[in-house]
Image (cartoon, rainbow, N blue to C red; front, side, top):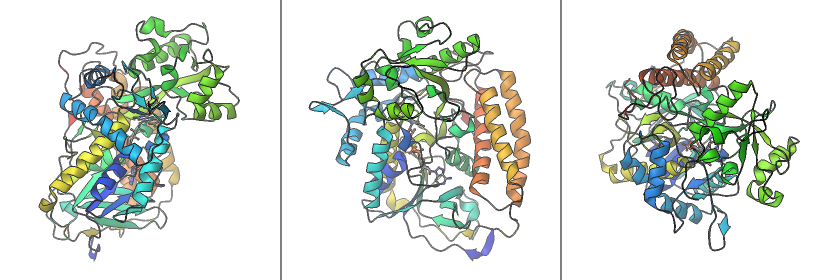
Length: 534
Ligand code: FAD
Ligand code: SIN
């Protein structure tokens, strides 16, 4: 760090890293009285939020109850959820939907009420949606509100590298107090220091650590890795959710076929036998069993029969019904030469959601003073060992608001940040071997898919741990010697995320929810979080 080149003083009260559902919800709540800076890697719409299809779970139907939604969430989460968090989130869902409707999200209606669709693991119809492109409508409404708010500054094209802590103060304190972030301006290549009294991480998941994932390119676990490096605990990282139905297409790698297709009658068929196979794996819940059950069933069919994919068939429903409910998917598939009103859709499981993450409390607080987190980068206790479909956007709204409310309530206790040191580039040179980054990136994603996927063994996990150790030396050396780039920042965070996943998986000596290992096939009597301490 260069002591002489001090960063300029803070212009904002709170920094939020991430412009998805969690980040923008927090920003809008804070901007009532505070000045907020929102940083985003790439475009403001680059996170998972804009890609969400199915919808948002909320108890809105007269026949439905909070108790049922809570029970469904706990059943899907295999009892690892924290009941207090589950109640907190689910009871706030109707308010979250009301607030989004006020912001202009055009939810589908059925007469005078909202149309509710159904997804796996839900005992009632309770998914509020905007056709099959809910996330895009939510992202657009939140962004519009943020763009017109004079207290919010949106700064896209910033890849945050690390948190600024007491270690980076000009008068070194070495404390874990967080004062903001170092961020790479992706256009100029300069690294900026942004400081504020409070920082919120809302950076989304780490899905891209797997070769096949429905998540966008930037889901590289940056916030989780940054918080870990700064000293925050991380929990339940072994709980990686695989969505059962990602389109199988050699040209289109990560297009999701929403669970609502199964919710509206879609059946899973083995293309070799022509048989509906969920009758064998879960005769009661069939295609609407929780995701871990359905994904494992598909994985098993694929392996047993040597298939490339299975079929998801909704062609028995009237064509009008299919086109009306799934216009985005219908158009996309038609563009690929497949008419889902007449033909089955080839699907495979793919990584979809990061259930674990930065450990937070009910106020979105992390272990580190001044640092909050919300959304998919966190482990709040809501999802436990497996997330119930459409509970995650909900978590973003509830914890985005909770973090903002706590910061507003405690504002007088937040000190102004001290002068911090600017980013030191005096000992690095321009990278000359970009191929190293590409090679390592591909290697991580491949061994994570093969060794740390849907079905695990201790031996495979140990193999992955060994590869991670070797790659860590190589990547850290590269990081110390070469100027940072977005690819290098992401590679370092991908490896950190992979390490946290494998360490957590090796610690869990049972199969529970999303963590299924042939060496410990039984579920233990007591549900315990896997908490990693830096
Ligand atoms: P994101 O929306 O992912 O946003 C992350 C933000 O952080 C982005 O702005 C990104 O640029 C920024 N960021 C990341 N790293 C950095 C960095 N280093 N520096 C600066 N900025 C950074 N959930 C549901 O509840 N219902 C659904 O129907 C649903 N469908 C889904 C469909 C798909 C295809 C996918 C992938 C997910 C789906 N999910 C769904 C999950 C849900 O979309 C996500 O969990 C949720 O949107 C996460 O929101 P977030 O605000 O936490 O993060
Ligand atoms: C989907 O539409 O199947 C995704 C829903 C979710 O991830 O919650």
